[in-house]
Length: 278
Image (cartoon, rainbow, N blue to C red):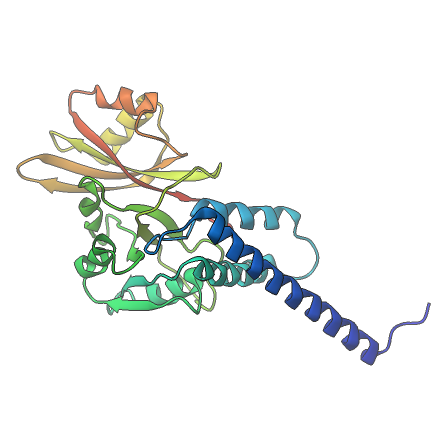
């Protein structure tokens, strides 16, 4: 069999590119119809993290050949962001200071080059943008025992937005070296994807060690990760932020079992996120 010439191969690549372009334009038309079918309101945030996670996981399951999946995921993430903007425009508030400059790039990778981003040097200002409705999403550093960021306590009020995502989700783009973890916060409906984490706040009347709290959680049938962030409040007790394996709702029997502990005053679920596709 005669090998195709370089010109023939390039012609075939051009044909494939045209096909890809045609399909992208067709997809944009379908997305416009989806927005109409949803009946999206003027200020409604159109992003659906569970749907995005399902798409990328499905692509990963069927992917083969020499093209790196991480590159495919970055391309798809950009497309998802652009198509979402077609449904309804929104902006992202990003916390950036001298210790968290990479968060801007992580937010750009996740939410796309065409989505407006605004930088804020204050945690309070970043989160307030979502509470006020001037930004659709806030991107904030993940609280750890090391950085002691307690912005998550602001999500304990009634009708507060929730944690909806964990970054990086589908690769780190141009970032190199150690990449910190960040959370996205928004006011949207959340749904399970089959491979999720729950962000739970446990309010106790007395200070508990990390091991003590982990023992309570496991005895209730909950599977916590190792990192637990605790904040002391002089008048009301102690708040503990815990990541749990799975999509655990407030009426789950394990939550009810945890709440009967004498030292546990209340529990609050402040969000969920789909585990990364990397």
